[in-house]
Image (cartoon, rainbow, N blue to C red; front, side, top):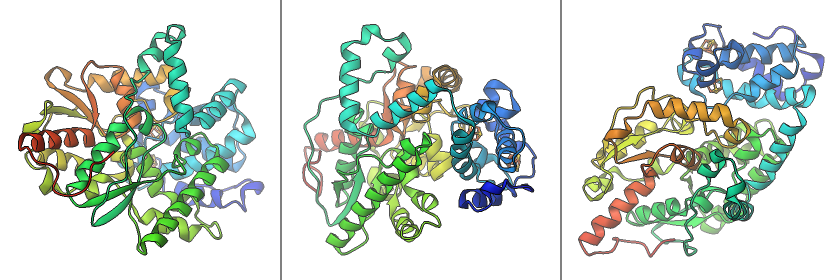
Length: 424
Ligand code: SF4
Ligand code: SF4
């Protein structure tokens, strides 16, 4: 697809990867049918094929301006286009490499730059997220209605201890999730304790680097990723074995699993990042389906709408696995119209594009049979918080749903979990 690469890009590894991916595109346009922003705005430049053309034009030195960056920034990086593309175009690999270059050379408005800098320094730090939420709740009367509705009720739970078992895994508590939904990791620890798996929390770094990477803050993201790899290597040395790494939030899990892409060709880090990425597991790959059987009978929410986050279905491609677990547990998964749809959260994207985000949420909710459901269930903290602003139903992580049902079952049998100690 690329023919006349700008001289300044010829030696960049980013351009090489982008060129290889762009060559696969045959311009068929199938991907536009499942692109949330194209479906919403009807502009070719706000769909995957149009964005690929824009990035190609930029790399070749063709006409490109601030409009190019605006269209690229409107992309949710949901990867729905990748699931649809019959040619296997890995769109995200082009976007992640070309957009930072385009933004650097073509510029973003100063307000946008300021917002990105603020989000990039606040959100990856749980202490700052906590302080910000406390402040926002104190002065919530000053916030616009939309933001006020998005403020999560933060449960104050006692800090939790690492759990023990015959196998130990590391878990990333998640920079936002550990503040707003600490029950998810507690639930994961309790479920895995029943399988004899102990969990150790990764205390530092507190963020996988996804937020900074999505904000095109490559250096900050790389620093977090390097620290994460070092933490994992230390744990492997201590245990004298390769320690699996879990993340309950599918957004974090996908980013951790793709560390190798971020360090490809980087001397000293490429192999280490690849080894780390290979150790990352989603909880759905670790939980034993046999052990969840019949749990729905103990849940107050047996009929559910399952919203598969984009990171789970288009990134990790594990939505089927989660559905299988929930079905094995006996939950009734109500049919969702256009299940490929993004809810409009997409990490920090919803903060940068609040109006588009609201419209995407509305479109997503319209496909949910809420009147027949007891709860909405998902797999990523961002989606969980976003969807909760649009329904009075409980919105749970699937791990919380299973863990609570398992606790109720055990309580009804008046027995404690088979193995493992009290978890966080
Ligand atoms: S579906 Fe794939 S090959 Fe077709 S235009 Fe989209 S990215 Fe290109
Ligand atoms: S990642 Fe999502 S929003 Fe971006 S072009 Fe692909 S389908 Fe559209």
